[in-house]
Image 1 (tube, rainbow, N blue to C red):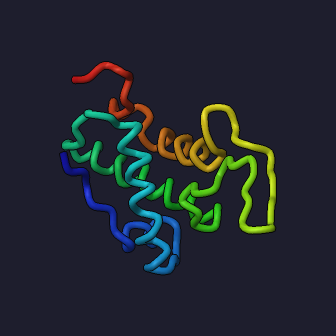
Image 2 (tube, rainbow, N blue to C red):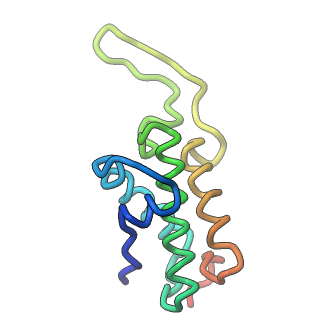
Length: 122
């Protein structure tokens, strides 16, 4: 199933300037995050399409706030490269902080539309 296309111009119209490369790199993770929340629900009606786009844009904005990490490396307890080793606090319950923030941003845009997947396929 295809979902509505979200463009760089859509992002700039809501959130302002962003480099094209950053947007293009963030878009797949943003669309995937929203698709996970929507599940098999169809996105067809104009208000659903608008909500989908707003949700994807919100996740791209979260990614921008995280330095366009796309959630990679979030929640790692430690890493070792050769003789270098670093450790952190580990992951938040249920996943990384990036993913938690991204899902929350998307849910805010999808709330009340009927698009949030409730665990029962249509």
